[in-house]
Length: 479
Image (tube, rainbow, N blue to C red; front, side, top):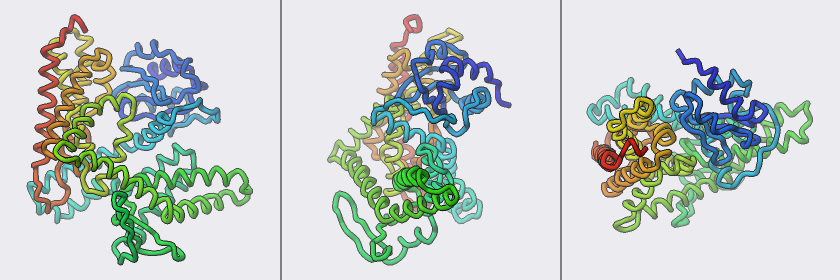
């Protein structure tokens, strides 16, 4: 039974300036993400002292109240207490203040991906479990149980454009079911099957990739990637954004008598047709460029993979602080869907273990019960579930040195990943569950457990380095 957080919600509501100061509210794994009309009205010092609040941050145009793993219960109860509309928006039309391009980009990316992160991780965990089972028992891949369970593991990934269409519609403020129609059109079986047919023509653009078409639209080539748009990210986001522009424009002049059905008809037709003819190929070009740049960095002779992996490992938690890590996640997903593996998300495998180990060293040396009460759950969250915000905001970042030490440990883990060339094959869970991501999903693969072993070594060394440095240098009386 969920704990009662009514008082906490009431206190947060009062100190963010009341409902009238809230333009929107969403949540991620550990944070309530407010969009405030005037963030100067928020009493940050008071909120940070509330029982149950770990940290408050004002970044990227959002006011973050970090409450830890209980965030879903707090969010639901805050909706009831405050009267804020569920789904991320308060029913007001006041314009928000100016934002920097970086703030807008991060707000969009986090807002689109955060709502599906839980199911996304769950599907990844199931995929990893199945990959682990088939390594020991290959025949299981032919069993009906494997097929049923694999629908859980792969269904969300396959229909990812459909999921993203819904969350993108919320961010772009358009009809969710119209956006859903756009997403479904991208994974419609007939269109997916086109790429299995005869190639009518191709254009090789070298660094920018090869573009092929399998059918034409009134003589215009329908250029599609070989795998179609299943599991894709960028195309559906651009198409839904385009659709939202058309929808907002159409509603300004469309007569009310026909608006209900002619607006979605116009929006879906233009978005899907132009999506396949223009937006899709452009998105494929962008995807190819981004992927090629990272492949170029990681593919530099001798040092490429090492340098790239160390940089990602060292600065991953810094990116998490400001939400910039969301800018790398879509690229990682793109690599998984186009290459079948990814080196970017593999490079950060050691960060949660390094952070958890640093906290463990502090836990052993600091006997203060209040500190240990905060430290223990934060440490468990980082180690086993890969959720690092409680550890970062509650302990490591305020004391600075543990955070730096954890980044050093994570960088060492990235170094090992770079040296061994380990990659992930799925976007799986976090923490220990992320280790399953290093198992190949193809039962016929000869790679076996080699990359998973590299990941385990990277995590262990990250933890040992961080623990050793923190244990040797930590003095509780100076914390």
